[in-house]
Length: 133
Image (cartoon, rainbow, N blue to C red; front, top):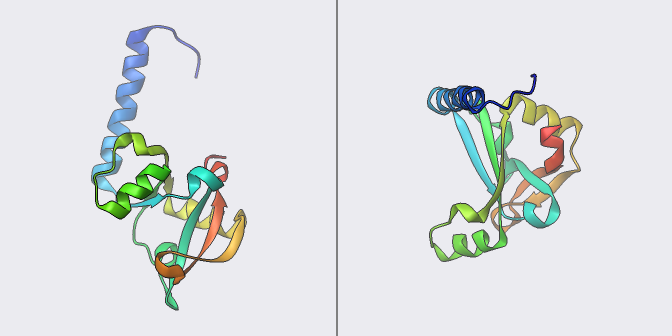
């Protein structure tokens, strides 16, 4: 796209983006996952099995996933049942489920990692920067 410093042009492009995301959010299924370790590790944990049964990415019906890297203070809020603030969200990645599955298979950082509640799940670690390559 060619640079254009005109605010009216930028406004039109921004409104197109808002419409695209609005349509996506209202017409597609989206799974939202918080990861409270990403802020310090740079990895997202993607579960595919829990208690010996396929789960997470292996069974999702969602068309897209939103992976949210939340701050350490967000983790404390989660455990105290207080409301999380938008400032507790460091960044979020919107990715198609098909692309996420492919990246988990081909670009994972580590496989077969225990995690989830009481480490009863198995998943992969994937570097957050891989999701936006």
